[in-house]
Image 1: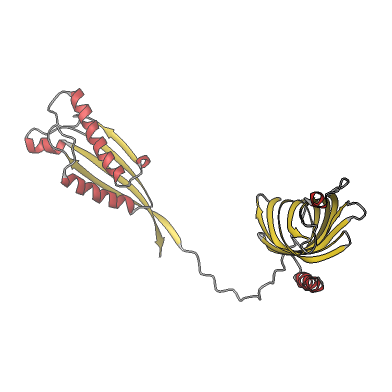
Image 2: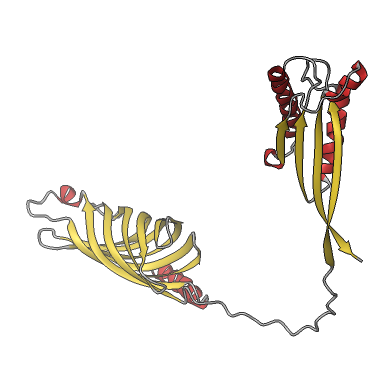
Length: 319
């Protein structure tokens, strides 16, 4: 017991050497000395008792701490003499923050106990485990509820017990939330400031006619090559807008030609979008055979088209 007390004292001294996340606390609650009354076989026996504790620890980060403390786990009222239990614990604390102010924690450790009962004094070391929840009131103060379970106390005489301890605790932190000291850097001579570059907007134009077969709105391989070149121009500009106008030759009735010119313009639009052109940058129109002038077949072939006009803008540095 003396060796255990010395080890805990050294641990606490080390903790206080780390200013900033050191804390102390204490609380009170209820200790249940499990099965004690059943073992002594007494008509008058009460194995529930008030308890209190005090502790100190060091919080390494939001998730990990070490802790040591004193625990008075009360007494069991036995015939002729009460059984008194007290001891010192060391624990490792694991913490899970849920919100800025609320966290859950668990602990595992050892409990060095001294038990006086029925004329016997027993000292030993028992395993300890616990869980709890903490509410952060402010940068200095927390309130928390804790449950602990201590196993196999009193192994050297006939009265043995496991203890369930429930408590409410206040915890005071030292230095938590304080701003860190900022070391100002040494002044540095400013580097010469170069004048900012000057840019002007350059407007670029692109125009081409994509041709279609008779009574068709399918894109040919040649048409796709032309559209790929138009897409390269579109991508080379900071901003670009595309205007499409579909058309037909004069053969056929006007209503049919109107629908065919729409299908041709839509076919070109779909290909551009498939290749990554933004749909909102495309203005799609059609005009049927309104401007068709071809008489010979070679002339009519030129009327079966979609005109693509691109206006692009790019920023050019002025030298």
